Image 1: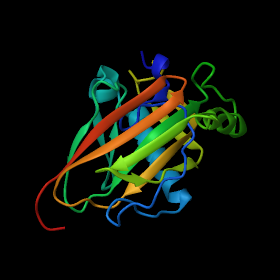
Image 2: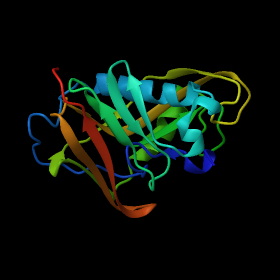
Image 3: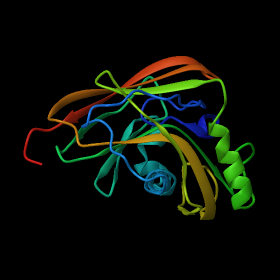
Length: 215
């Protein structure tokens, strides 16, 4: 099942699209960050997903997962019918990987690369001209940034989500992402909409519940 869903469903649904320009978001909604930092966060997200054994990996059962990336929470799911609901502290930033593709040295084509150059070319398939992708937070548009990870060294455990023997592998991922500032206490909707994608048109919603309290 995992290999059939190699375009990972991050936040709401994984599709290969090109992100259009978005209007300015409110101050609390978007957090400017260097592309390098965004790429590192995307890499940490993939490392967590790939290095967590199946018995402890919610993605293996099709369940959504709110991944803690050293204090930054990243909603993640494989099933568009079961988008995540993440409950976070009021001082928590949210990392949105709206669409992402990962390629490695141990997966079959079209997600295989024998070296870093091939891995990057593979992951760049995430950027398909002609499709559109938008992200809104509580109805306000938030820009998405196309980034790539550094080359990742993945230590695949026994019973890993890729279904290969335990080993060390190299990986590169790319995706359209955003880093959201800590949101006010209450319930917030993250909506990702895609049109003209290879999976068709879609709209999916992820819920972020910010607990009341002091930052």
